[in-house]
Length: 584
Image (cartoon, rainbow, N blue to C red; front, side):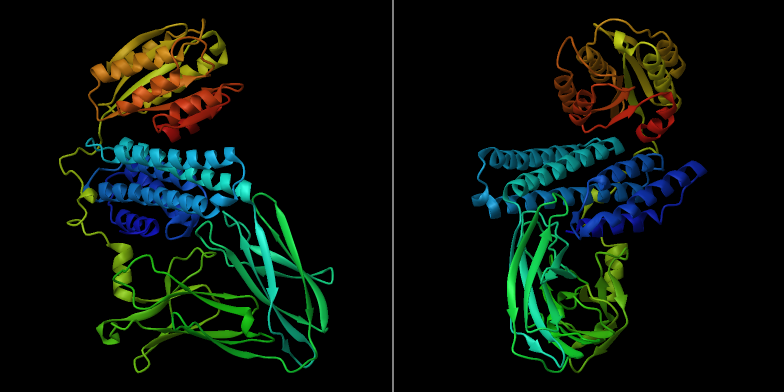
């Protein structure tokens, strides 16, 4: 199966082939392409992201694609984007389970142990809910957005599980030295260390010599949480004795640990300028030229491949340097079954700190040695790919015959009708500007509906009233909105239940949504979150909009989260157009 990042690259390639039929479709397609393209920067590796913003960008992209003709290309891209987010959620859960298992014996507080276990369980449940939505026979962008929302929740719960372990265990640091290398005026002392923590957030360490700051050394961070981080460097000192202190600081929590070691050596000798290193496991070799460099300034690590792919032609390695250099060559062995005459081979490079994806670098293939050699000016991740197979993988990897879930239903119309119920709070706390803003917001939503979309209006205070049943007469809906007035208690649950009853009894569209415009603070009737869970069972999404400041944002967020919807807050009517663009 493709990794999350590969699936995303495939989506972008598919969208480039879409030919919009009008200006609006062109604008929406551009918005979707931009959202997905920018999300690539969130990746830490093929299957992990550093923040949850990507999921929101994907939902925005799907919302934009809803307004583009639903041909097979758009539908295939939509499905692949959802699968990309599923991959992220699945990997995050696997990481959380690994961290918990690795550090379980070090968790001394029972409450933190239970918290981590609950978050992993919640992550799995959210993943299952996303899978249920994705497998729903009713096709639609709303279904896909709901699935992504659940996958985002799964990702967040898994990250919270890791954070729970991290807060209990903290970080540990161990430092050691090795055989020194005497030079003519200095002595080179190797210093290496290991940092252990559930989540890897230490990117560098500070090294002090005899109390004075000497240098900063980058840490080899593993993208998989729970894997020890390592650093190695050389200290060139004009002394035969020194006290070295290494300080590591957790970038997220601010926790700081340090360890001190003593160095001593008998004398000095010549410096080293040209070095060669070989990784015995992968067989890769590097040759480096630079002023004052030594072997321990460079480390070559083999990297396990995720699984066999058609474009693989050599091992994966990660080269790290702790000193600047002038030039270098990387010589990669070809796999035993690779015949260079079968196609074009190249060394490929990927730098996680660069915006570029894997890309080819100038390569000479030495057939007699069975190697590919590239001259480079910086180090990072390297491998050897079949060029044509790699290009196929990022442009047209998915075989539709093998992946029927990517194939669109050709009988679908270009735009699917929506059944939308407005639920508006007209309790006493909504008096003044709030009720006016809510009415203006609802009418703006009505103005954005398509001709075949149906809308209904439910208002609530101490009880709930169906002011307008589902209809395509949008003027009638606006007329019912104009009749709203604030006064009375707050029975949000009754309002939501009335809307659910109308949608389940009279709804016709594949996509059914509720927009709740309120200030929260339920004081009467059933629990609105419980009603929202009932809506979720009927495949109804609830988006909530908090009107004004001082609202019960927690209640409105919980209602939206129960259905995979979104919560938005506006302080006054001037923000309504922006919210409309996000929810429409």
